[in-house]
Image 1 (cartoon, rainbow, N blue to C red):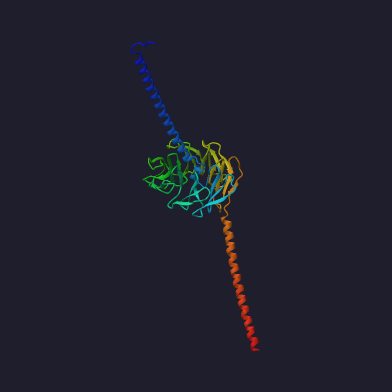
Image 2: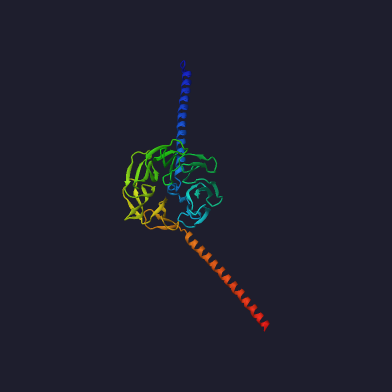
Length: 377
């Protein structure tokens, strides 16, 4: 076969150009793939930071949490574990106060919680309980490698690298939310003006997004649901502070947003009820006539305590039902009564023993007197 003059060098040049072009295309695809992978990794990290079962309940005290197999909840004497239906309950960790435990975060094989303003962690089987921090451990969120104590500070999960975040730190727990890379909270500014703020989880980029006081707040799907202090009514606004809307003009507290509903403590016929309303303010419903506080929601079950009740029992009710069940019965009061009865019984026994001893001594004296008389006779 004969080639025209220059045909061989032309083919070599074309081959080289095709190779360069193919390499360039592969480089672009590789870069795009790496970028996609990094984005997916970042999204997964952010998602993992906020989608553990029970995390959305932390704003309401975090007294109930879950993994795939078990419930973890607060009792007066510490942390309890049970099957998902509440059976097989066992006490797995001691608390540091008579107020139980709060802000339960389940992470891998560990459970992090606060009790008596001290921060603890314990294995899911109840072993290796450790105190991580002894100072101001309130409003606890565990995000990736960090434990956040409200807006005050964050500390590594092993107790190292404590970092101060925010100077004022007057943010109450019923407003503090951590979602993705942002912390949302109520506080006062340098002029002591009350407001809602947000800042990065590293403490940077703090900004005021709303002027006014709120007592309850839930951040969900780019919306902030909150209760104004002035009228106790329910509002919502975008997470940048825009598009404020009145949702419900009644006295509202203890809000918790789940799916497309807002669950809250409200009033019907002048009595406190556990209620719910759609996130657009429609379809307001009463669920049960209980003065519900610490409203927690996991897997279509609502967990709550009853305000002003003498004990610290936890109740549950399935979404769509109106009959409550008892999850945890606080036996502290009955235990105290039993202890008082035991102490009274011991006291009575001691008095009886003293009386018996006195009687015995008297009998001995009488016997001695009789013996003396007999001798004298």
